[in-house]
Image 1: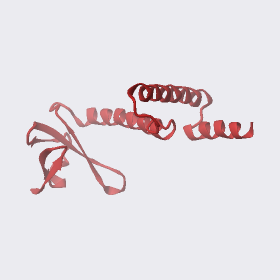
Image 2 (image 1 turned 90 degrees about the horizontal axis):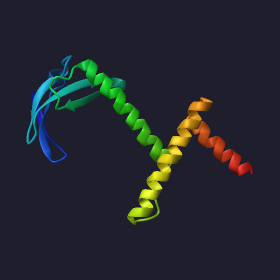
Image 3 (image 1 turned 90 degrees about the vertical axis):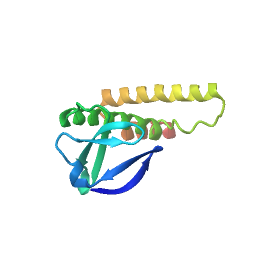
Image 4 (image 1 turned 30 degrees about the vertical axis):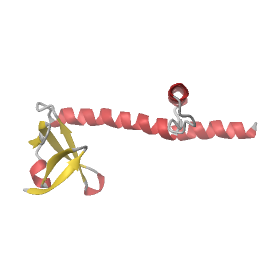
Length: 137
């Protein structure tokens, strides 16, 4: 059932066939240089498959779905910081200015999110409205 060896952040693991990993509550496999992990195969959009791995052997599919929702919210937060608040565009190299930039970006994001929640609009609509008003002035 082993297809090939593959590298993942310096550790080597065996990629198993898709059918073998698609058990309801995951499959326990051995990860070289780490130990036993539980792998879940999840059907993604378009017929593709995603694989989730955890060191918690007691995790069930329902718990994995809950964690997946939390992970998605974190991904959306990071995307908003990068795309809406331009957190990665700091034009400085010293520590203090970079930390100031990060702090101000997070503050701007919280204010943007608060405004969007109150007005019931999306990030894009809010940002476009702010820019449109600034250009008109």
